[in-house]
Length: 246
Ligand SMILES: N[C@@H](CS(=O)O)C(=O)O
Ligand SMILES: [Fe+2]
Image 1 (cartoon, helix red, strand yellow):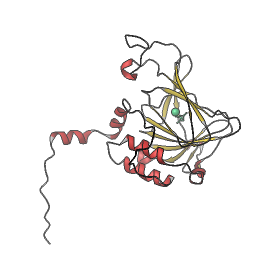
Image 2 (tube, rainbow, N blue to C red):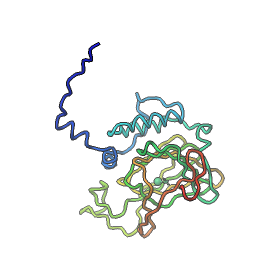
Image 3 (cartoon, protein in one colour):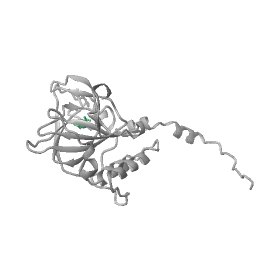
């Protein structure tokens, strides 16, 4: 049989420019306009298990032009099943824990966070990444704050006609309870947040997707003092991490 390979077409200028946009750059740009789905897409694919969710996420992240809405849809569509996530859910007495489920070939991180009674995070940002947070068990309360010293152009919000936000302390912009199977979404353009398990008798568990992944974020005090915090993993793939591997 004769191999009839077709002559290669020269890439047009536009094609070659499109190919140069890398996924990280694309995702960071998308934080300026992406706002979150409230309901799954009507004709979106089904997700039947956590394994299915991870596989579907890997497929979405194969393209440089990640369909963020589809990522959001997949997170919404997965229905929490404790039997599937229990092996990742490791608690600490004193603080919430971050447990790595999947490192997404370096393109995203999927984590299970375990919140003991009354545990909460400090006010923090998300290092210019997208953050999807899905409730798997219990309740969490999210408080949002304006990102300090961003101009109206960055945030689309302003208290001043000239667009400057010159507050000297954190400005709260909302408080939302997140119920089981709901998905909350935030990025730095939408603000900062602090998350808390309001219950004094029950634990909570949430599933977080960060893209691109990050190892540090900024933590803010009431007076806007900002520090860089390293984010660590309490466990990876269901195995408790040693101090030097976190
Ligand atoms: N973004 C936080 C959890 S939360 O408070 O949203 C973290 O990854 O540790
Ligand atoms: Fe967060």
